[in-house]
Image (cartoon, rainbow, N blue to C red):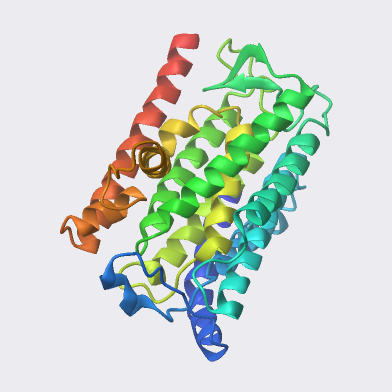
Length: 352
């Protein structure tokens, strides 16, 4: 438990203290946010706010994880390194996207094809490697079985799992990306979901099949290290939220949103809670569905279901203040996390 605490604390401090330096540096180099012309007019005042703050979140997470291992002289694990590599790889795709936006002074960076291709490469490499690195207990970082609160009997097979991993990673990273449209909305919701994975991974560590004979044990390769990563990511997002909360002094950009989505997808795969992420990340699911519904309705019937998608803009255009939307959506995110944790614990009790 001590390494989990150290990871969260170090990541929090690095993010909290490091973000102001990033703000000043980005301002000095003219790295500012571009605003969509078709968005709410109130957002136009945010033009020029420093962006690419996701670099701080990634750095803080990596430093928090590293510090925890250095302090207690513990070795890193395959599961941990794969999740961190997934985060960094997707963060790089987001960084390129943000850089193009700033360089060309437009609200669109990479083309859709280029962006999805970048995500696909990172996700597929993760999916392939996650089924390797089997330890002495015959456990790999990922299982080729579909999972909810633990593995089901239904197996994808190696190729099927890689496709499934690709779908999970792209869906989750784009879900967080779509949610990141209001000050602190995505970073605040991410704090809650990462907190839930600290609990889940640590619970799996205490009830691991390697160390306990209980019938309700979990076959997860490196649960404690995954708890350390979740704690580091949570601390990094909390520290960033201090400066990202309304009125935001910095935005995470695609650099941050894609990286955060990558960590969440990686944690879901490696903790064997893939379908549970749909509940824990309920806010991200709602935001994504709102875009899908809007696009399908407009292309199929020529009508818009919402004032604007993603969903949070619908309420802004309906007259809600930005802060009201943020707080109420945080409440939705918190309820989703609470319900997801309840489902996870109930499944543990029922398994006995």
